[in-house]
Image 1 (cartoon, rainbow, N blue to C red):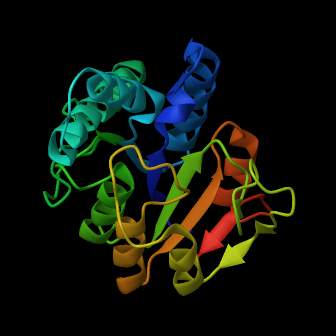
Image 2 (cartoon, rainbow, N blue to C red; image 1 turned 180 degrees about the vertical axis):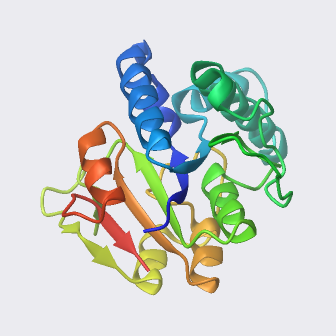
Length: 227
């Protein structure tokens, strides 16, 4: 695996129902900085998670809000989360949050933070575009699940974990349409683009950083490979 990596960091890892996840932030900072010392470079594309969903829900509970405006609220949440990570990584991070994934950056910084780009695009999609723009073959999607399942394990006790799945089969699972606040392992639009460019996406639990280490070092790990 290349030492230049695109990580799609789920907002649910940064903020939970209980508040900002300080335990994760401290562990994640230490982990990323350790890998930087070993020569890794990271594009960290940060999601809005529960922060985005709570703000969108509040807006909808107050007045009728169209998808464009709902997405704008979500985008601001992703950038707030990205700003938090940028501050945490300090001088190791590029000091501007990337908001245009089509722009090729020239920097020697090892950590580059990105948030949402524009309405209709999830941060998963931004991660895919950054990977394409920078010729990175693998996107690692850090969420709060260990695997992709063939159906929602919260609703169906018969759900089976998938260690690998083709893009064709994955897209059958998640559908083809994006909507603000959609909660799927990887965004349908991002999936279509990743499949077209023959990218590999790995879905794993971002809380389990030792497992992420195994993934980076091409050792046995828990997660789902989509390709």
